[in-house]
Image (cartoon, rainbow, N blue to C red; front, side):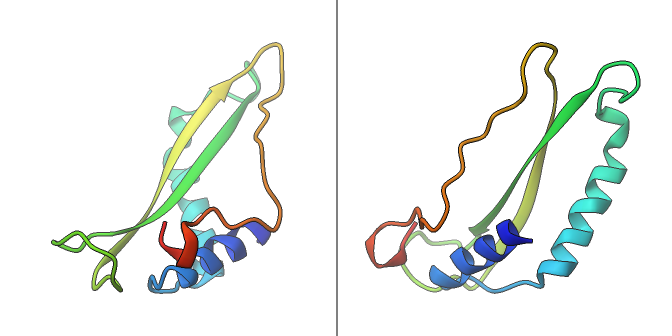
Length: 103
């Protein structure tokens, strides 16, 4: 839940609409269940799953302002790694936003 808390805080920081973390986590679990046929079979070939969630403005105009419409979506990438673990570089306590909070 820490990552979802940070994701929500980032959305709040750039004045995007907020969402319920528990509901988003439930949606993510449902997405994994729906797309599970695309993943490698766990018994034959152990794999890993990478999920990237994004929250973007879908306003018709481009500019720095509070968006009137946004979209929250996730991309899944099942991977098969035979010889090494998937390594992901994570930062703790760091906001990756432009100064004044504009990403």
